[in-house]
Image (cartoon, rainbow, N blue to C red):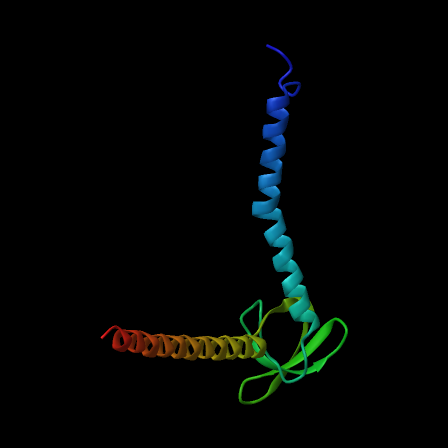
Length: 129
């Protein structure tokens, strides 16, 4: 029984396992944290947000570490910290609208290409006869 870590194959396997763990677990988590921090840094007055606790409200004022939101029909004001913001609903709605517009444009382009191809195929059939 030799030294387990003295074997070059074991060192390579250990290195591969660590690299796999980094790319499968650590890197995606850091990317998600960076996106969340960017979302929290870009909050503006008028944005509709959802807090970690599930409270939905519209931002009234934005300060360094705190945000004041108004909730409900009676317009209650609640002061929360930035890190308590779970998602920016206004930004999500804009993103969904942009994706829908892009998909619609792609569908129109595809239909136009198919129509052009169909006309070209008809032309080829006429030339054969």
